[in-house]
Amino acid sequence: MKISQIRVGADNFSYLISCEATKKAAIVDPGTNASEAMKAIGKDNLELLWIINTHFHSDHTAENLRLKEIYGCGIIASAPDSDRLEDVAMKVSDGDTLQLGLAKLEFILTPGHTPGSMCVLADSRFLMTGDTLFIGDCGRTDMPGGSDRDMFLSLQKLKSLPDKTILYPGHDYGDIPFDTIQSQKLTNKTLKAKTLEELCKIA
Image (tube, rainbow, N blue to C red; front, side):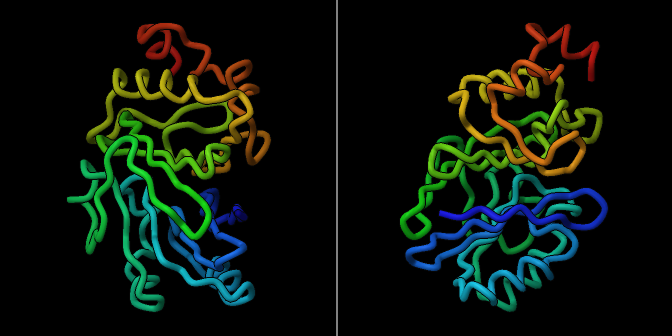
């Protein structure tokens, strides 16, 4: 399996996941400009099957319909966020999985930034977190549908993942573009918060 981290616009990250054996591919959060991802799809002769949205905000989803029209791929979103998006083909819940060629994707529901925010865990090793968890911080909870309590519980869920899990955030807000869960548990102020009250004082 191959994961390509693609910078989109000012600071968004998009991710192209592909099975190198079968050439099956999915894109996580195409953002506002999928041109670089499309170049990679063509260069590697990939078959784009799915667009996966970690949440419904337009800076992550604006290219959904263009990619769907070009490649005939389906759109995946969490069940809670799906009503805010067009043409969703698959609504997923916490713990649902998807086979992408030989690669396995698991969807982890992590509300807080939006009611249906989710992370995508690829082959139990690579975690694309959207706007739930960044390098050194977590997503905003002061927008419509945001919840401090839900965010705190979601962060506890992510902290329970294996330490070697590699975190790929939805924005380039940190000093580095990706990191391990283990490192973030030691350095990320929001993951270090032991109570909801502590998190609220930070966020």
